[in-house]
Image (cartoon, rainbow, N blue to C red; front, side, top):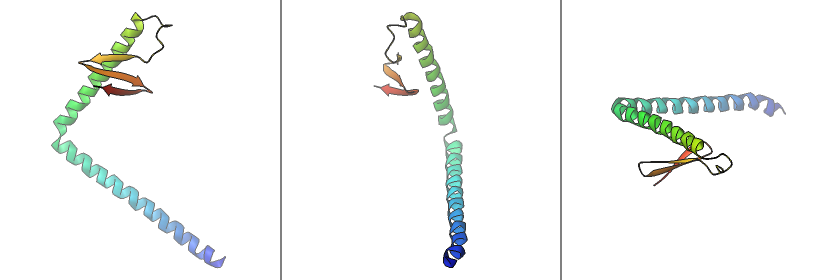
Length: 99
């Protein structure tokens, strides 16, 4: 019991240190990676961001358009849209592209 009382705070302290340094290294590595990508691929990030923004807007627009055209009692299936030959199925708020 005495050993337990002595070593428990030490064990907790070492565990907390381990968690702290693990989170610190993960954060630093993530920041370094993000900085690298931000500096070297900034235009690519912008293109990707705007592509995803426009695509998601079009997907929402076309699915609402299909909802307006289709009677609601027939519209049991998941709304999907076709953009440039790519069919996007909406499943659990996730866009799944099928080529």
